[in-house]
Image 1: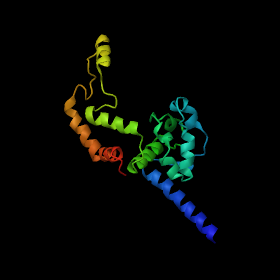
Image 2: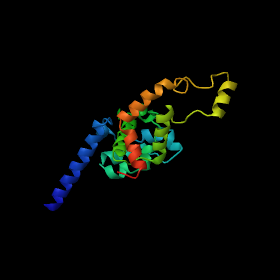
Image 3: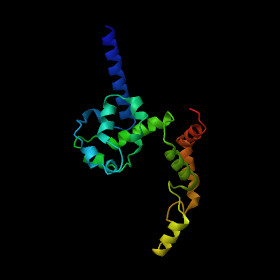
Image 4: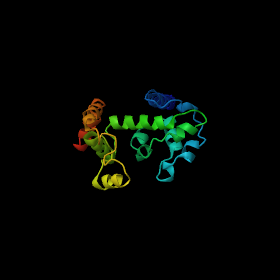
Length: 180
């Protein structure tokens, strides 16, 4: 009877986690039949250790702790190639985004992503413009500043408001301060 109880609890955790990810935007996880189209077509998978199919399988198996602590969920560039090509209309990119959001709420986020969030907060860009890029833009006949918050800094307070409203800046401060 104890084994049956353990299996029921395990299944309940698996179903709860899968539903949690689906509610957070990763729809149709249960219809994924592991064809590998997502991984096979992934441009980032050719450049790093991203294996979308593995993430989908781990999500379906309810491996929450392993997934949220995995660096692999942060390798995705969110190009949506996997979602576009999925024969079952699963949305792997949205699953990965949901997993990232869950990890972030638990303060499990790579430091380089927090640094990028800081740049976006300060400048509206993950990679702020610099003198070399400005010179190249001028040489190409473009304005020194791209037509973004670099050219329209009055929009930066709006960007900052959004990042604050999402709680990301508070998470960044807590993680960088060593708090959880």
